[in-house]
Amino acid sequence: MIIKKIDFADAKESLELGDVRVKEIIKIDDNSMVVTIKSDATIFNNDKFEVLRNVFLVDKEGNVIWRVTSKDDDTPYFGNFVGTNYYKDSGRLTAYRRGGFLYDIDIKTGVVIKSVFMK
Image (cartoon, rainbow, N blue to C red; front, side, top):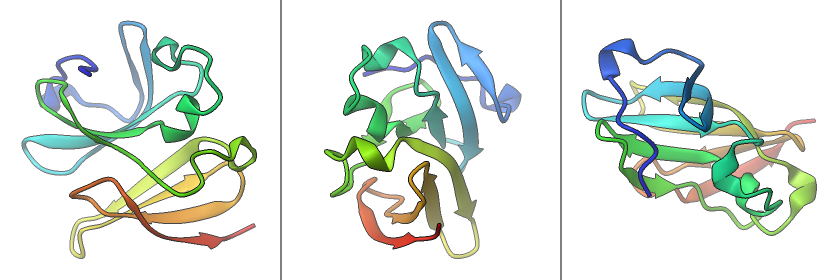
């Protein structure tokens, strides 16, 4: 899957890339960024399960390196991811889901390492 070539110098917190509506971008390094796609983006084809995995790591050509995966991906009640944080010093990536869970995500694989209920 290719999202679209992104000019890293112009990467903003929120933008639209054609029919892909980006909610948030976090630059990881000169070659990759974490992209959170809005839940109404056409790439999800109105699939309630596809929308749950709306965080991607992409390279500067727009190629998807990974798409987030968690044990809760088959539970629409938890909702899609609404915010991400990257802590450069520790290399920690976290994401928050609409249902109240905070997830630690392995930055190399996109697999959720642990989750904590916050609400």
